[in-house]
Length: 414
Image (tube, rainbow, N blue to C red; front, side):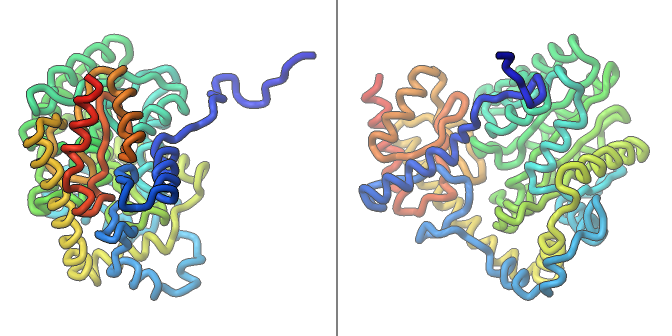
């Protein structure tokens, strides 16, 4: 009997096993069996309070609960997003930066929607997407889902961004195809917590300008954690370098309201398109609009309206509440990193953000270490070349002594 295939020929039928959701369940099962005090759950990438309960900003949800039911039920006013939302999103993301660029903001289903929309529309099948070697896992899934290949650049050299690896990979890809799409997750990189300096960004832009003499270049800047930088006055300063892009360079920033407003389940975000040429922006906007219509039709109306109201009418309350948790996040990361340094547990360079990553270059040791941590009831996320520790979800007490315990387990394996 002939075996029929009902899905497209290039579809990957290997079942999806999401590492984060899988190990988070294992951690919860361990807590149920051994008790919360015995288990360290450093898996989930959301902000938890000191009682290890999900943080949901009162300034966000008190306002959301006051929205009219019909407003919650209504469609958005347009596929691109509500006009006030699009305007406020651009203002929020670029506040304090005088961008001399044409732009558009397109509403998306979370920051992931902005990433997926860009990746699916900027490259043709079998072309190569350029990714950080240490990075968010679903980037590669988005590539394969769109029949794309991918290459990775090394993240670090001497505790700084590895610009040499970045350039080398870009030039190798440019030799095989006439377009570059590179993903840069910054600031507050997931999973290392690194943030590029303004000077590092300028070197990236200068290099992209050179590459753009041969082919169009797109920088996909994943800014999911931008609102959790430790110095809010400086977090967006790097965007000033965007003014120096050439006519043949486009920047698309993937913004996550899900992260910025601790409203993960509302799935709201935006793709900010930046370019020198207004027609370039308009062409991308049209394609993104059609993609949105085909995939999710329109974005959650109440989430967009809530974002506008909270970041304007209730901004002072939002900033005050957020500042408390940013300070808490810094306190947690400071404890873990200072203790890691004291005991010799090597981490990738961290500046700010939800995650710290322990450096484990050897793949076999990484696999063994990851399992050994679980055997000792320490649940983390295994990433390329390291172990991700979500300090965002650990309270201060859980942070204390954790680095030493993890170092002891690692030493026992060597």
